[in-house]
Structures are given as structure tokens and as C-alpha cells.
Length: 384
Image (cartoon, rainbow, N blue to C red; front, side):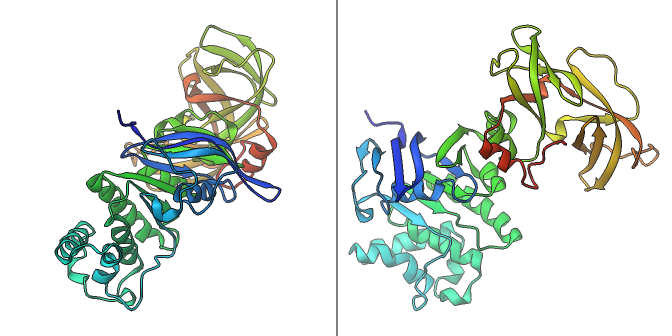
């Protein structure tokens, strides 16, 4: 019986001299899945992709493709194709000839080549550009041709190494939609390497977040964002507010009370069963807060703080507030479900109440040195 997994990575380690790029990584990628390897520069994601492609070989562990051990197979004997940041199109060939190249090398019949190239041109919606040269088309069109050329040999897996990095923002956004459509159309496994969390979140069925050669968490975009398992993941995926605290007491099986220095006691959802007296981080996303001049109605699961508005930025779909409360400076997003011109908006220097439901914060074990470095980045602020 064929495995439901397209790629299986078992205990893989890769070193370059004294530097360990990938450390004992194990994961399974399902057949037909759009799977992303996400993380900062130097985390090991590209090295892992190159091992799947056959350009690097692990010192330990093995890799399987559809159940077959490919750990030591050379790249040309693996049914995978790779797309890099540089499109690597032949400048002297037309787009039609570029796409046909792989089939011609394989000495496929002319009729088959024509049929398959025309099919690929239709897939990437570039039939009208078939006989142009690469220097006559845009960057986004070149990327589509590179994808068609990689797909025409019918690989079992398509590897994409930061394929949109060279494109401008609007073109990247269009290409994300096109990549998703192409994946749905061809139905093979895509493995996508990126440091851009937005790309990974919008495209992926599942994401592996990598840090220092290891996998911190694997899950769907919603799970990774809403239920991070470590301070690193919470900081790297989107914005969050971090509070440092110590677990004081257990309220019941699901909740406990945590003391946050400079803030007081808060109620926390304890999904990770962190024990009393353990130091923790509490992560609360900016959009989970509510803000008002009026004190909210009492609720045993609401954590209510009083503070002063320090900054306001109106962003159309929502407004971002920075509120000083105790020792913390909170980042808060308020969505504009309905904008009423006769309402008196919260203003700079206003005293306000801010609150969040205990279910909307995530307790995380106290961060490592790597997490602390991550939390200093502009898009991952500590709420201090």
C-alpha cells in the first residue's frame, strides 16, 4: 500500500564544518500538500530543501520519496524539480523552447512535446507570449515560465526556494494567487521555502517554523498563529504582546492565575499544563484586546487593565493604539466593523480600559536566548 506521505524526513542532521545547519529534523509531508518551511535567515530551511533536492547530503538520518529511500540518490535521479530565486531561463531560447527543454533532453516524441508545452502555456496563461524571449517579458511572467518548465517533466514534488523574493510587492501578491491556482490545478506536492510569514500563511496547507536548525512547530496557518507552542513562534508569526510572569495558582483544570511584574494578577488559559511557580511568557495578539473609555461589564475570564493612550495610527481597516499600563506598552488593534462619525473616538492621552478574554492569551514556557533575540525585532515587540 502506497504511503500517504510524499516526503518523509527521518532524523536528518547536516553539518558544514563545525556549524550544524540542520539538527535531527523529522517530518512528513503529505502527497499533494502545499507545505512551507518558514524561518529567519540561517535557520536551516534552504539546507533542508537542498537535501530533498539532492544538492546536499545529510551526515545522519534519511529521506524518503513516496516510500523510497533517496538519501544518496543524485539530483537527476530524483523525481523532484527545484525553482530558485533566479529564473535561470535560457536567454537565447523562446519561452516555448525553454519550457520544452526538459522533454527534448529526455528525447520525447515531437507530438508529445508540442502537446505538453501547449498545455503548460495554457496553465500559466501565456499562450500569447510563446515565441517571445525572456528579456521581452516581466519578472512575474519569467517566474511563471520557470514553474511551467519545472512541471513539464511531471515531478512528484516541486521545490520552491524563495521564488518570489526578486519581485516587487504587488507582483508578489499576484504571484501568490497564481501559485496557489497552479498547485490546485496540477495537484502535486509543493515544498516552499520562505522567510516571509505572509507568503507562508496565505499559501500553505501546513507550515514548519524553523529556528537554529530545528523545527519549533508544525501546523496549519491558523494553528501556528492562534496557538503558538513557543515564544519564538509567537514572536516570528505576526505581532504579539509578551508579558513575563510566574504561575501563582491553579483555578481549575483549564485556567490558572499568573502574577505579572508591574501589572498584577491575570487569568490565563493553561493549555500547556505549566506548573505552579514556573516562569512563563504570556502572548496576547494586538487584535485580541478591546479598548474603551468605559469600564467593561464584570466577567471572571476577562483581564481588565487601566492605562493611557500614548500613540494612535489610523490604518483604514483598523486603528492601532499604543497604551501604557503599569510597566507595559501595549500594541492594540481595533477593527472598524462600523465607523460612526457621531461617535467620540478614543484620542491621544485619553485614560482607557483595555481587556482580553483569558482564552485569547497563550502561556508559553520562559524563552531561550534565541527567543529573546527574536523578540527584539520591530515586528515582534515585547509589551514593555
